Length: 171
Image 1: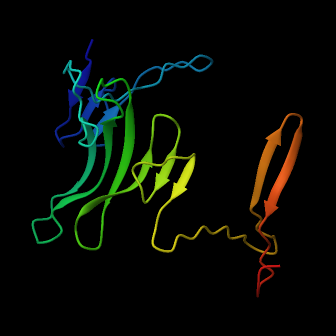
Image 2 (image 1 turned 180 degrees about the horizontal axis):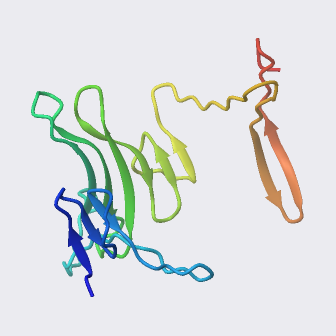
């Protein structure tokens, strides 16, 4: 049976005979124990000297508009080896900044740390900026809270509640 199809309008279907987008992947995943439909980006390189700064794999979002400065990669997700052995990888999310340079904005490390404004977060969530600000905005008449908790044994201790916005100031 047919495994792939290219339609007259250029759509490619794998696992479907009626692709309705440029690339359409389809498979019977099952429902109670699904096997996901997978798009794989792979390398066949075997090495022990992987770069820990340059990506070995990239998913790019490209604008092919040939009027300057529009044409270029506008965003990408890079897989960068965490160790030279190639054991695991970090994900780096990049966006084109106002100067037209593709720059990292969020990093998700294989150890679970997430960085905003840094590609090397040393704690679970690290925000790096000239004047970092974290905002929680409630809609309607509800309040926004920020709670920092410490779990010591069976007790959950509120270390600090920074305050609630009452519409004019933090109370």
